[in-house]
Image 1 (cartoon, rainbow, N blue to C red):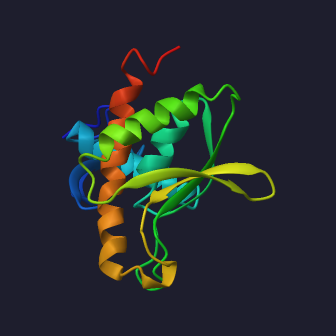
Image 2: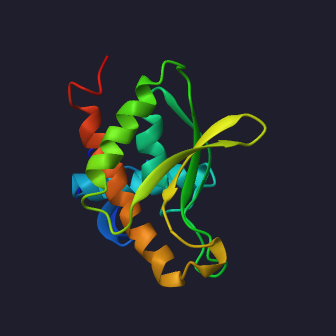
Length: 171
């Protein structure tokens, strides 16, 4: 097998992040199923930024809008019962990026396990927080509900990426 990037024959097939891919031992290029390669690269980029594997795809999707900037993100914690969340700001002040995100979220909520909302909060500056809506106190949220929220994260990222290609998301 030959590396598609550098032509090296030092390509090994192995499991990476749960996907069976080929990796060049010379240049590090990944080969195989395009979706699996993209997911592994996304996980690696997220780890370089210190992001949890669960939330990295959603962070990338939000930032790919070009107008939403993530300031903090967490994939949640089953032990501390912290739900997944993403703090972000809009780099434009006309409200249009937030309206578009909310439209995407409204459509995605028909497919998610939980209802996801965007709230405004003050964290030294005004920020938005994307998180699942639990109609209970944080200490009453169960580990199972956190797991449900984590399962929603890839779907939210996929729907946002899809919608970014649609005319109503573009200026």
